[in-house]
Image (cartoon, rainbow, N blue to C red; front, side):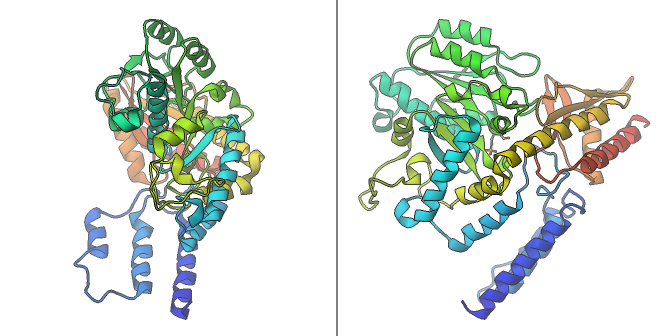
Length: 467
Ligand SMILES: Cc1ncc(COP(=O)(O)O)c(C=O)c1O
């Protein structure tokens, strides 16, 4: 390697370390505008190019203010995990090796790592050891892949080859979701040709859990191919659909496929005190999840598991003459919509290997305990109401004062906290009420981070409530 390349990579590693050294202390919000970023990063593309170290310097400098500190300990927005050090380092190697993870012949190492990591994941999640696994970009594509497998399976049982013939003229497939299914389920249904507005939506209870009795009533009136979409971890409350009860109901309705979206909730399986929440998930026909959420690997990495490897493979693979399968080795592209892709199982492998199952369980338990700590701290303040039962890592907070519009007040507090910069969290609407949403999903968050963030939220709240 030329010494200029060696220098570039060494200096870049130092810049990356500098970024991570500061990510816990800097304001969590981005401290710049899109106009400023365009000024620093944009302009016409030069004909001659620029020295690589200047290019990297420009990016690394802009990142100090232009990124949100989502990798740091006080980012509580959406459900965004950080990245454990082993996973960041492994991700650097993935870029260095530049392997195409699609087929075994292109990268034996990446294919084998994917198999090993997949086996570890199944064992952590309590899924069957012979389940198929795909490493996709995120839970959106995991839901898509799982539902494509479901579509194949239920239609094949009805004598229809959907991959060859499409949906036009196919037997009707009834899709059942809940009122609280994540929007990516509907996006997946749209991409699969089912339409986003066709599902029967089962009502939910006060925490957003699918009502099993209503599902049973609905299924009783359905004949023909059917897919039920349940959820492990409501994106607002963290609540889990009663998966075991749902599995009983689905089992009694033969030929129905049960899918579970466990984008972040699946990781409860790793934690001794929360594993009961996912009881019955091993009975699902497919499960979708995200490693870039609670396993704390860098973006992007979603996970899809199915109990039906043949359906999974049939839905995803299309042979090409020039791709010569080895017949004995596993070709990862057979389980994902993508053909060429990066070796995103490598950081998963590194995270799992470095944490061990105990370390992962401890990370999940700690984040859940910290979510409860945040809820306890905030709920002690007059006018602050916790809207959900804090069963996992999610806390929904509402701010109320006599004579004030609580929706507006809550939105003001959220905007104030984002602006203040100690931490970052987002807003949502829960049962027609505006709410602040706190998700604790980062391996590096400590009790002190929660206390510091709670103090900042309370101080913004007090300033708004006294206006
Ligand atoms: C329950 C649920 N499903 C699916 C998704 C989509 O995941 P991704 O953004 O990784 O595609 C999310 C994201 O928050 C989620 O919470």
